[in-house]
Length: 143
View 1 (cartoon, rainbow, N blue to C red):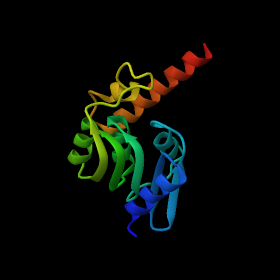
View 2 (spheres, rainbow, N blue to C red):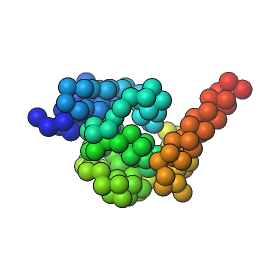
View 3 (tube, helix red, strand yellow):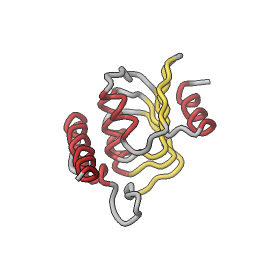
């Protein structure tokens, strides 16, 4: 079984939201949104050459995939903006459903991470914008 198929199967069978696979190495998460990739990147986990299966891939997550160096992506849902990022960076991808935009959890607007990266094409800049947005939300919760 090829790595992307292993990642897809684990995600679907074990109820993970994000699975990264390369050879016998696996990184898994049940967290939503950008949380899995932000955690992996912040922990300094080397993801170069990994295949990833993710529930929802918007532009923010796609830019994190580029930053991390993944080589193949499967998404249950993917935005047009994410597709453009993956194509521009020559990352192979497949998906179940394509949408114009990733919508926020309330369903009344754009996902805040998608919004934060809408006009960003540089993966490092995207990482910083996502990090700032997460810190803003954390401060709002505490305040």
